[in-house]
Image (cartoon, rainbow, N blue to C red; front, side, top):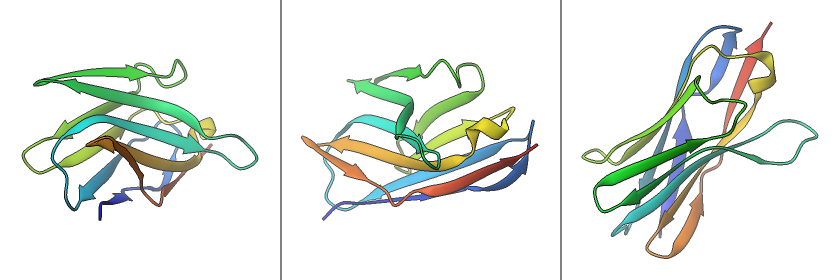
Length: 118
């Protein structure tokens, strides 16, 4: 059984920063794709950032709305996935979800709330 747990959300003023963490646990042999999504009230879930691993190289990509402000990364020794969010804006307010593709299956976390006040 694989579990994914996010943390690090909270309330921050516009222009501030937060770092979200995502910890997958259980029987995992190889994580090939990690993604952060977000869902604001009344809106569809949207992909914010992704990172594909090919051999030992990671290939990150970002939605235009967060490019230059958000950074996706992974500490492979501790098996923790991060989303560093800088210069936050009120429109970044949403529940953020981590999705991990490992060994041919996808796994979701429960989400963590990020609220940015103006």
